Length: 132
Image (cartoon, rainbow, N blue to C red; front, side, top):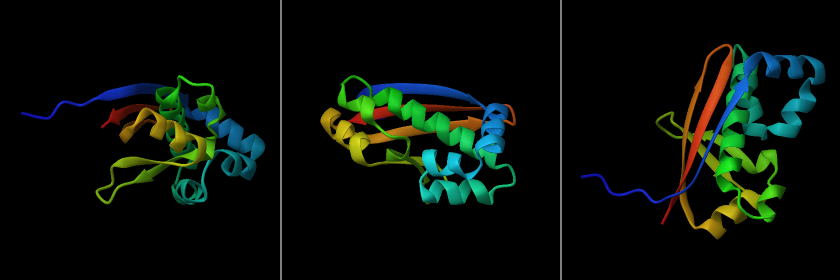
């Protein structure tokens, strides 16, 4: 039998890839600098279609942000305070810093479960906050 999971919050988000492509075409590198950490930017720029990978990271950040909501302080979470990383096995993971890490500590989050999927048209993410 699997152990019970104490879900403290859940978030989901969907981002349209063509919209991200248009934003990148219009704003250029400023989009990467404002929304992504240096590691996320390097990963996205290394891919054949950066917009798809930016879109799925934006969906993930918004899903985690939604899961962390519930306090005034949580509204101050910045885009780069939620970083999409990859585990050794390739699974997506999340690293939190700043206000995002503080809110997670307040909620006593032990782990953030993250699921990502994308096509050339849309990117979706689901985040579940797991408690102690």
